[in-house]
Image (cartoon, rainbow, N blue to C red; front, top):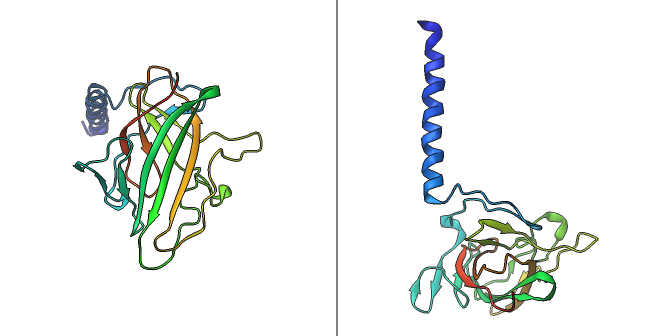
Length: 195
């Protein structure tokens, strides 16, 4: 009997895992889609309390272009200005950073995907709700991101406009979720322009 108890626990744990996976699949979180060029399956991401807060002109909630979100960096807000398809299957995210803190703040590499990128806005990414794909910043042949260089320091009252470019999702994708480091996600941002 003693030799069978570990096997029972293994069977029990396997059953619990199967139930958990089935529950995720039913809610759509476990849906897998094939990754297209420049994209990968989207992670299950939720805004943490340190990611900041979101507000819109209508009240709370982070949804759509024109939404202003508060960073985990005190006094730093971001507004998504546009998300547009362009020629050559490229999507451009344009956003604005506004800093109204009391002292200058070092932002440095906080918006970079990797340390080698330095003070570039390579960290933002997009997720399409239909294919559940994650779209990372486009890079040139030398590995440099197609994105804005940001100031290492932001002074009180400063506003900085920035952009990041991504591979375009399929033509039927009309809205995307925008993720920018230190900010909560902004869902339902309209994808404008030609398909």
